[in-house]
Image 1 (cartoon, rainbow, N blue to C red):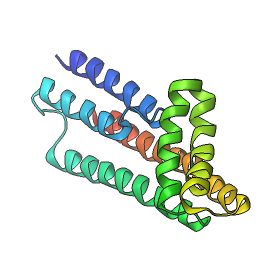
Image 2: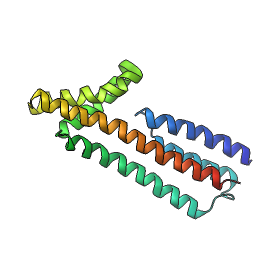
Image 3: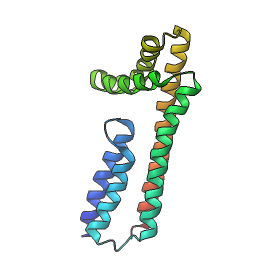
Length: 160
């Protein structure tokens, strides 16, 4: 039974780590869900409430940092809410139309277009906001990946 739980959890973990890179999948929630599925399959016999509480706090930290980093970074580089919306739209469209390349350059171009079309900012200011969006994407992804790997290390070191 524990092997089945571990296998199911690992499937969720793989999807969660992929979700850190692909915006359409919720990365950290899938990792947390994998741990809950493991607990359900094993009757919560291997991992206690303190483990799940700690993992829930780690999940909340990932989600809060992801949200705050996105708005802070774009605004730090002079972007507005329009740049943030353009960045999100650019990420989704870039991923659909251009796969991995679009996922990197979509937020950059989306933020630039958002600033130019709606705020009538100069091209230099719009590019700076786009750069902030790209910095958010790369930095945010790295931070999320580190936290999620920490969650997984804690899980595998606690499972016996």
